Image (cartoon, rainbow, N blue to C red):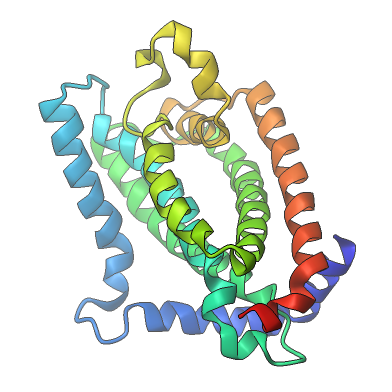
Length: 258
């Protein structure tokens, strides 16, 4: 793990350049350009709010704000997973270069999607203020919540991107699995509306744990559940160790498998 971190740090300039290139290329040629960073989640929010609030009658005060808080980190998570998982197999010409550090590719996907998330935060703040939800001292917890979520995503993406080199079915399974995972995470509904007999199982979902923390920080203006955060932190560190170890062990064979 230490070697992996040192190598990433040594190539931080390359990572930064590729992230900037990724962000510029994402909306190149579109009329609205970077505005899609804000429009995409807002359009998604409008669709889900229409279906779940007005048709399915989910009753939560300031429901659009509640949903927006959970939706933005999910977009960061799911986009990083989908793009990061195929980053090695789709970056064949770079991976086959002898001196190119392959772990840079999944990190670029994670960081570029993180940049999109961070750019969306001012919109979220204005949205919450406009709805009367407001902001509070609980935002002081946001850096920790973001950092733990980042570790979780990095560990999972490194593991899946490495496995996908050997088993290309992973990328197809993941796309379908993420849809199920989304609806099993309390983003569109509060945990209080889950039947009591099922709440324990919902809380076993790591994305539910971190989503509840985001809701506490942004929406409920309270300290996140420390026990849930501790469980999520432990899981993230284990996953990070497994992902880095797997990637480091097999990265020398990636070029011949692509």
